[in-house]
Length: 221
Image (cartoon, rainbow, N blue to C red; front, top):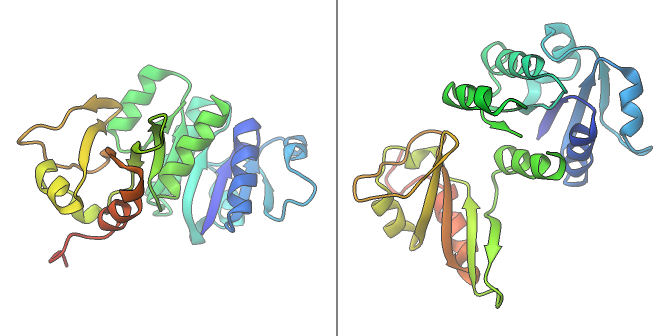
């Protein structure tokens, strides 16, 4: 996947290195060319000087071929504007913006732009959203038998009740993160777009559960 990052600070450079190490191509944008010094000497991605809401800058970064766009500069306004340009002008579905003001973050979350907020934690949260292959363990019991994990969910599950999803996956949904708030699923809870599922199950069963939920439900076309 090609991924464009705006902001070559600690988070942006950390993400760029992790993504490149995982075989992805990366372009990183920053208005200050000195910021690229944070990148290691062997970094193979593109370094683009400019702002992430400038169309020419985004095109130079390869936004047309991007599978994801990440805005992690030091400015909330720049991050959200560039994220919206990436999504609305260039059609990038996988977009994440770092927002420092938690009150504003909730507003943008409701507009459908995932927001995250501190360095390694931010990098981890962004990776979970733009590289949704595999369950992401959040907690294990001391023996490693039971795992609480954030699991990627295929869009085909949207509109299906949590109970039916649990039955199909053979797993229990511990809670759903919906627009930044935790929700305990009930009898009538229906999976909605943007929901982040947290599943609790045996560690040995997570690979199977992930395969089920990362694919569309049987009979969905």
